[in-house]
Image (cartoon, rainbow, N blue to C red; front, side, top):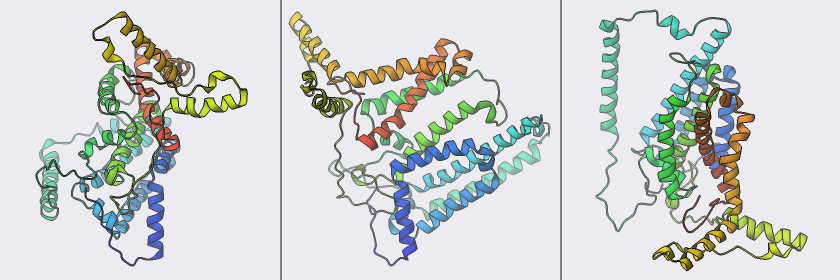
Length: 407
């Protein structure tokens, strides 16, 4: 996407304040926290939140934000770009459909408290004829969609650019919108993990859901009270960890993959100084020197242990080369022991703690294998917000950084 060109115009003080406030809220460190808190707050007080009055107010508020924001040339150039128009429409449609589903779920939960059947079971008793009722509705929908696509094709230019030129690289170079979530994850993870491991875990995790989830409730009707854990986990993973990443990568990442507010000029010369460090750097360079100053123990005054890549020394194999290799492995373990212990606790010890506390019900209902798969998928999903927060607060790069593999 080309950098947004700012055209100086005279604007009122309130509009400048509106843009500054929007840019402040759009900062990922703040917007992610607000999105997470807002989602859990909405689910906690769902009966007061998920109704048509609040839903209409949210949609009207979003529409007003976009309409008022289009007065700014930078915002208009980004949002009105033909590539981004479908994503903007998708945000409204996603908000509406999720809201409608939660409204129906809250209504069914209220009916269940009154010993009434779900609304879907009552309406399922009513018969609707394929002809003429269903075909009339489908035909009208066909006409409306055709008109919308024709107008779209007339008034929006196709996002076609010149043939690829290896000597000219777009800045920023972005993937299609459905891959922008993965591209945004590259900011926080090593490419092999964000581009290969996590997508495979997501795919196999989605395939495993029917074999893990043995709760028969909620089939054929909307409900939240009977499936709190499943729906909360899905909404957080979909909205906070996927839609949020797509929005950030589409609208808020500019030249150099730097962050820009929605009303901020995309300056291609912007440089952000980042001093990314690993857990081992914090331990050996920051923590241990302070312990040495307080205690005087000489062991804490040795600095960061060096590690070399000696994989090539195994070819051809020999005793000396093998011994050197295991010496380097030991040095790598010594340097990265803090990250190794943390990940071992996170993936090996924490599941047992959860089985006795928050996830005790699932541990009792599921067998050991299914519970282990469930908690592994949940904890793996939790590594994304954990790494995002650590990156924003501490500029953390890797928990484990060795010449052979990085976590």
